[in-house]
Length: 131
Ligand SMILES: C[S@@+](CC[C@H](N)C(=O)[O-])C[C@H]1O[C@@H](n2cnc3c(N)ncnc32)[C@H](O)[C@@H]1O
Image (tube, rainbow, N blue to C red; front, side, top):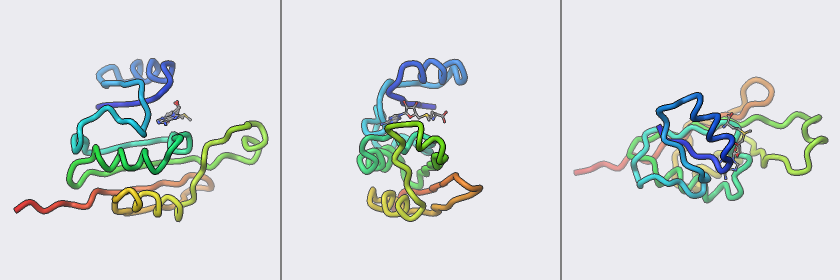
């Protein structure tokens, strides 16, 4: 398992939770992983923080192998939260998520809201048929 986060404290916490993980201080926009090397990309409540979401998704598409899959879960900021913080995560609706992942060349299998405030997006790579 490979993980990235730009903040050292988060990497320390991740290492304590999953000691076997290979962790890098980096961002989604710059994944330190070979092209096609990953089967599954998971992102939880991070996508809204990516400074360039289109570039991050292009990186996700690059590192996924044939038939690779990506799951992105985001939490819609509560109204109180919105009043408290100056810079909020860039929250996207399911429709916007669909356009963004397809813009990165992925197939959007699902982009949906469940519960009151969680948007889940599931996308796969276009399978390349080798002859
Ligand atoms: C709300 S926290 C979620 C942390 C963790 N994924 C979880 O579910 O507990 C958002 C995280 O996104 C990270 N982050 C900010 N910009 C990022 C980027 N460009 N690429 C990847 N992660 C980023 C932050 O450092 C922070 O750890």
